[in-house]
Image (cartoon, rainbow, N blue to C red):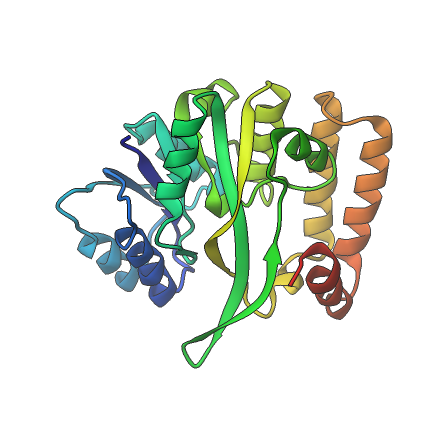
Length: 273
C-alpha cells in the first residue's frame, strides 16, 4: 500500500532535530512513496539545505513554500491537499519515528479496512550530551469505544503518530486554524462524524519533549485556547454541559498553575513512566 508522509517545518526548528526526524523516515522498514514537506514561511539557510538534501530514489518529494508563517493548522491543510495517496502519515519535524512505525500502521489498515485513523503511544525524551533521557510515556486508549470516551476529556491521539485516510479526514473538514489544538479539533470532528479509529498499544514514536515542556503549556494565552477548544466541542454537541465545565475548569487551572507544579503534574499524573 502506497502512503504519503506529511510534515511541516518553520524557521524556529532546530536543524539537527529536523535532520534526525527525516533520517528516521528513511530508516523505516516500510518506506512511503511520497513525502510532502510544507515550509511554513521563510526558513533558515540550514533548514533549507536539509530539505534540499532529502532525496531517496523510491520517495517522491513535494515541497510547498508558503510566503509567510500561517501556523500549523493552515500549513497542514495546504500540505494535505497536495498528498497524492489515500493514506497519509503525519510526522513532526523534531521527533524520531521507530523503524517499524509505518509498517505497523499499514498492517493495521490491511487488517481492518473500516479504520480511518490509526495512532500509537509515544515515549517522551530530551537529550543530554547526545544521549536520550526518557521522562515519560503518553498512553492513549487502543480500542475505538475507549478512544471516544477518553476524547471527552483529553486528546485521544498523539498527533505525531497518526496515519489516516485522506478522503475521510477531508470530509470532516480537514485541518483548521485552531492554534494549540489543531489536531484535537480534527479528532473531535472525526469522532463526531462516526469515523472508526484505533491506537496501537506500542510506542511507535520517540517524542522530543524537552525539560521545559510543561512550561510551554501554561499562561493566560494557553488557558484561553483551551477554553475556546472546549467551547467549540460543546457547541458542536460533542460534549455535554457537565463535561464542558469539568474539563474547562481542570485545564484552565492547570494552565495557570506555577510552572514547577505543572511540570510535576505533567510527569506524575497526566503521563506515565
